[in-house]
Length: 181
Image 1 (cartoon, rainbow, N blue to C red):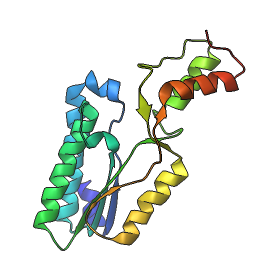
Image 2 (image 1 turned 180 degrees about the horizontal axis):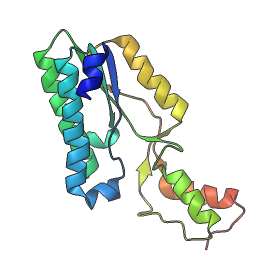
Image 3 (image 1 turned 90 degrees about the vertical axis):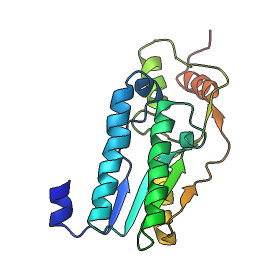
Image 4 (image 1 turned 45 degrees about the vertical axis):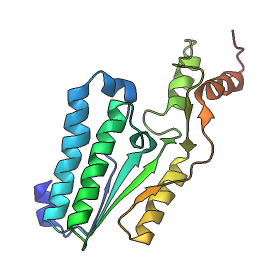
């Protein structure tokens, strides 16, 4: 990264790099720390050192009141970004929080579709679990929209109402022409 920063005059960084699978991170806390915290810290440090004017951190709604390792790692970096911003008024360190992006890597929908196609049971961890969803286009557009505001704040994107995961599973089962047991 240092070579890239020294070779190019980078003005803006969009940082979305993180492990986002809650269950995976609960079982691999060291990897969560190494990638989500240290990797982000490293990128923030270089961005500050090489005078990047705008740094946009893609966070998660799970960082608000973190109850998982993923949410906690994102919240730690959010706190560090807030600290950096308090020390550097000439730069914009912004945070964008949103929920699940439909059909992105790790999205529950492709997982359900694969289970249904393979005639496997659809796994829903709890019937009351809800999530916010948005399309890839919506997520990208909203992140780019935050750049237009050019202010160092936390942007919490309006994602509508949360949807029960079990309802998504039932709908997909129905779409595939199968019946619930």
